[in-house]
Image (cartoon, rainbow, N blue to C red; front, side):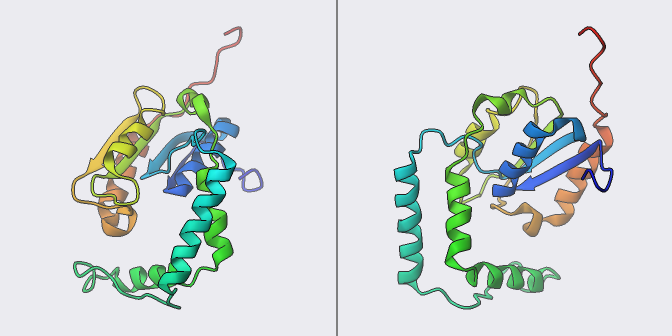
Length: 195
């Protein structure tokens, strides 16, 4: 970002990427105009011990091996099979299915080790929290509890009947929501001297 001279931009993160974007917003908030998180993982998993994290990772990877990991699961939901996004959805499913175990372990370890605590509530830029109420990975009650950790007054948008990846399921609606949010979000005011 520094090399490209990027400043006052809106950063968008989805799922574990939502936590990554939140971490960047905490560490380099001066660069951002706003933050958008889509179906993000909880930014603070402090109640999970390292032993529990490793046990959960071992269990998930064991179940994946026992189930047999196909080299490419190219199935797509029936409602997407005839859409222009079907090829993209197939490619994404194939990438996920072919992911090496070390990638799965690394992603799970990152997700389960988050420790951003109360810092998230002190983000200084406008935040949009958007999610689907049919998310099976992060149920809506968990998502709303996660949203409560973000600053008071953060925007909330919930799509009915949409799962964990609205960016894939309803990309046009996501783009419209992002455009509206970005167009009405003013750059953060700079602190006045002596404040």
